[in-house]
Length: 396
Image (cartoon, rainbow, N blue to C red; front, side):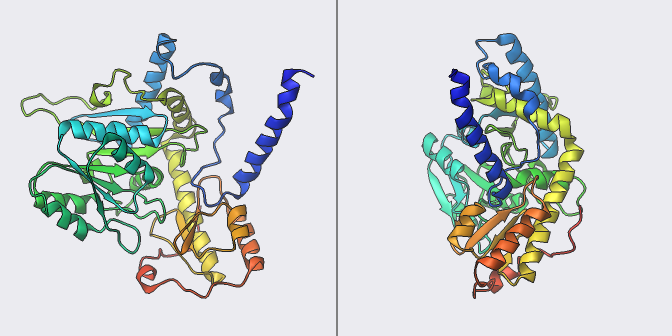
C-alpha cells in the first residue's frame, strides 16, 4: 500500500468531520460561504518566508498593501497618514499596535473592559504593560463612568483605552466618540485602540450607507484598529489586519494617505505569519468586492433578526444588541449545545449568524430545541429587555 493510500482514509475522515461541523456550528463566528480552492497550489510554497523567495514576497507585499488600503478606507483612516500590517492572527496584530503605542508613550497604562477579548489581555501580558480593568455594563460594554473615574486618578498621565467593536460574549460595542470626550476631560496623551475582530467588518460595511453610524472608526477618534479575517471573511488560516494612525511631527509636511509598516517594521506590510493571510484576504476582497461584502453583512444581520424573532415566537428567552449578528438565548441542554457548538457565558448561550448560515439552519435548530426539553422559566431581565433589537421581518 502506498503512502498516499495510507493517508487517504484519515484525511477523508477528517474532511467529513469538518464538513459536518460546518453545518451545525451555529455558535462559532466563522463564515462558511467563500471558496478558497483556487489557492490550493499556493500551499506548496513557503509564502511566509520572504528571505527564501524575495520576488514573490514583493508580490505578496503588494497584495497586502491593497488589503490594508481597503480596510483603512472602510474605517475612515486619516488623510494625513496611516500605517498597517497583516498578521497571521489577532494576538500578533494586537501586540504590533500596542507595542507602537508604548513606544510613543512609554509610561502608558492600559484600560481594558473585563468583557474584552482574551487576545488583548494576552498581548498586554506579553508586553508587560500595566493594566487597569474597567467594569462592564449589563449588556457587556465598557462602563464609561468607571473609565472616567480611573482616568481621573492619573490626571494628565498617558493611557491606552481598548474599546470593543463587538465584545466576545454579547457583541456589545463601545462608542469611541464618548470615550474621546472622557479622555479629553482627563487630560494627557491617551491612545484609543478599537478591538474589532468580528463586528468591526459588518458595522464598517453597513455604516457606509447608514444614517446612524456605530462610532467605532478613526473619524470617531480611534488611533488604531485590529480586525480579524478568519471570522467574517472566512479565511482558512488565521489572519488579522492592524491599522494605526500616524501622528506627524509638528513641523512635518502633510503626507499622502498610504500604507507604511507599523513602527518601521522591516518586513513591510506583511507581519508575523502574514504572507498566507494577505493572499487569502486579498482573494476574498477581490472575488466578492466591498459591495458584495456589504450584502453578506446585511444578510447576516437579517438572519440574526430572524433568529431572535423565531426564538421569541417559541417563547424561549433571547435578546440581542441592535445591529448585532449575535443572538443570546437561555442555554439548551448540554446535548444540544454540543451538537450546535453553542458557547455559554454565565446564564446565556449564543448563536452567531455568520455568512453561510441560512434560515434553514435556524429552523432545524429550533425544531430540535422544541423536541429537546421544555422552555426555561427565566425570562429576559428588564435591564436587558431595553437593549433588545427590534425584530422586523427578515429581508435579504
